[in-house]
Every structure is written in C-alpha cells, then in structure tokens.
Length: 184
Image (cartoon, rainbow, N blue to C red; front, side, top):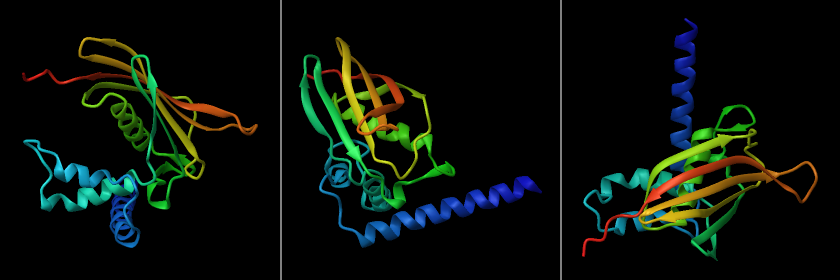
C-alpha cells in the first residue's frame, strides 16, 4: 500500500511540474538567451520538428535566466552564470534541496558552452552540500587540459556562504568533451 501512495504522489508531482512549465512559458516572454529557437534552426539529422514545441518550451523554462559570460582562457573559454531560479525551476526531491539531476543539467550546459562544438563523453558530479532552491547560484566552468579532440573541463556550482560575500562550492564537476572529427 505505501508503494501505491508514493507512486500516486510522484505522478501528481510530475503532472503539476509539467503543467507549471506550460503555463509559465505562456505567461512570460522568452529570456534574452532563447536557446529553444536555436534548436529549431540547427541543420542536424535529428533536428527539432514542430511537434517538439512543448520540449522547446520546457527547455526555455529550465534555462530561464541562464546567460553566461565568457572570458578567454589559455586553453579555450571560461564561462560563468549567476542564476536566481524561478519557481518553475525550483525542483526539489526533498524539501529545501534542489534536485541533483537539474544541477547536473545546468553543469553539463555550461561545460558544453565552454567547448562548442563538442559532445559530453562523461560528466562526474560531486555533491558536496545541498543547494537550497531559493538561493542565488553561481555556475562556473573552465578547461583543464586539451588532448587532440578531447577537452577535459572542470566546473563548480557555488552558493553564498554564511559570511557574505563569500561563495562556497556546493557542487564540483569533472567532464570530458569530444570535438567532432573534421569532415574535410
């Protein structure tokens, strides 16, 4: 019986979350960094069709407010983005703790932005402490080393510490991205 109740609660949560994404994307204009429109324009064998509009809207909500700044780095680019999550982005599995899968999604995105075009080969995420959903978060990424088409990156998600204005690492990430082969 408890398993059925947990399943019903989970299904209810998923339904409310999806409904919230759809209503929020209709109420608010797209963020200044509208990544959904880029998805629809890309020339790719698996390009996004009109039937994928709900997924594009969901991606716009998930990345709302994400507009990284880039700085040159000897091995490529460093990226940094400060986010204050909207209510639709404040996904918690436990009360007061941001969902780890969403954190991994944000980290994968900023790491990928440092080494375009490249794809994720692995993403190792270490959760050092929980991230409150209402706190500002600072996500950062930078290249560690480059070996041919392989790009090794590091990243961190930081939250304000107990003593302002210190930022504390809550999440650390190591990743490997692979650049596609030249077709020339």
